[in-house]
Length: 108
Image (cartoon, rainbow, N blue to C red):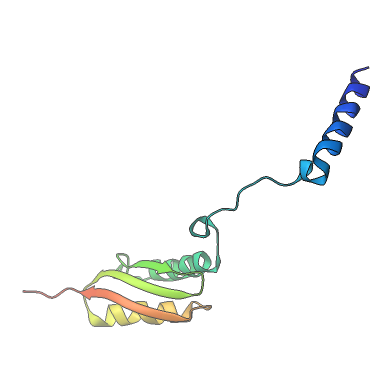
């Protein structure tokens, strides 16, 4: 008896709403919250920066757009360290551009 009630209810839903009654009602996730190629590129760059044996690049922050535009920020002790971070970013693959905003600390 319960089965016939459930089937009747199902038919009623189909008649009232048609295929729309079973449509996917999920809302799209905002682009900023989706996993994209930019996240993958960022992870590859961060992993390579972490491999620096002297730890000079550990303070470098990486932001990457879905299109592959990379921005490097942070502080390092030498221009060579900042240039190394840029080279690592370019070598990550999928990178369209690199903007190096890393500050080089000076001894005063």
